[in-house]
Length: 112
Length: 115
Image (tube, rainbow over all chains, first blue to last red; front, top):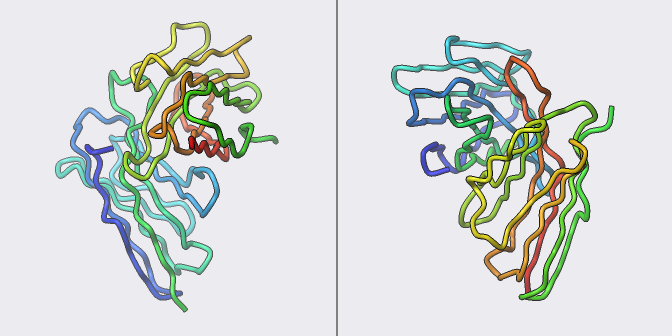
């Protein structure tokens, strides 16, 4: 995952918006994903975006993609305590088969 | 419907022993993936099966690791002569065939501890 970078930790207050950032290096990436991992659990797919899109919204989640800067972000509106988890971005690269390359993960802590 | 299941959920083994980890993908999914998650290395791809094609083994860390997928469904990941550095959570995922986002759905993982 050294080619996909994320900040390690983010703390927000309940009700605020959270923005989790990710940078990647491979411009050939076709799809980019966000996964959520709660303690002791597997990875839950939250959303994904195709590389020819610059935004995707799904209820409280908004994904922004800046392909020029190779920057991906996940915005969570009205963050709740249940959103506390580790969030991973991942990329699927052209010619890389369907395997995913994951970022280092961002631990989101939601405080009351 | 049922998601990806993995067994066992936890496995403790002695260094030098062989272990087998099992994955049952979502019914109808033709692609199956193994990843491992460890503190030092994060999430790493291990191997990928797609239908009847030869598997992509490019992520296997050594020849002690192997995997097979029988009948296009269940998969077993085998680690021979386990070492302490093999301790990790082994995650399996499956995805449907065809075009689209190739969304991968993950199982809960098997936590392997090598003592």
